[in-house]
Image (tube, rainbow, N blue to C red; front, side, top):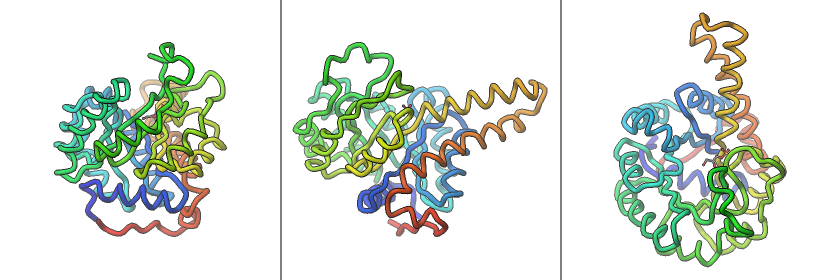
Length: 300
Ligand code: 13P
């Protein structure tokens, strides 16, 4: 299977749109949580994306992560896509593309619309000549670092801006700020479903929901029904990983072999990933596939 370009992902997201489900994307920080989400996907025969944020790439290097990601995609029985999540610079996207990532996100949503468009255009130009998929972002996905600077509906993506961005950049998918936040929520997130519906009516590229952790299951499913094609989950994977590893080290003691601790921690992460795969996929066409049959995707 040719997995070294963005065409497989284009097809996965199109299938998801037609089937009424979403492809889950999980952030990993190292090999253990990366293996956990991939094994979860293989056991459920589900397509997923596994993604590194810049903090992870800077700590480990695009060369190492790109090489490992490529091997993982190659040996997987069903399609999984390695992705660079939330890159803040064109240079980091280029480094990921040069090291085999088939999909990158350039996140310039904190800049003005013109700069956001210009940066996405730069990445698209480089990526598309190499067959790589590009995600952009509009509106703001809230996060603890800059939440305080939001006023009223400041974070909400505007439909006319999104339409202009998609038309001028040729971006492949779009993350939209509709009220979700990265990390745990203090209360229930206020998702603006009306804006999501308006976006879906106006925008033809797949739409992405960030900030999966802490969104109630019924809200994730409603967002998917209204047209979200990809759901990002990060904090809950990391939290489960740290919590399990801490507990296991406490229980077994630090003389226990690393492999014995981490293999058990991996199982805990897998349970979380499987629950998310079911939330994202079980309401749509993929339900039948998840009950036993492998999901088949044509080679691109
Ligand atoms: P959470 O950390 O809130 O799950 O969000 C992850 C995310 O959106 C990564 O892009």
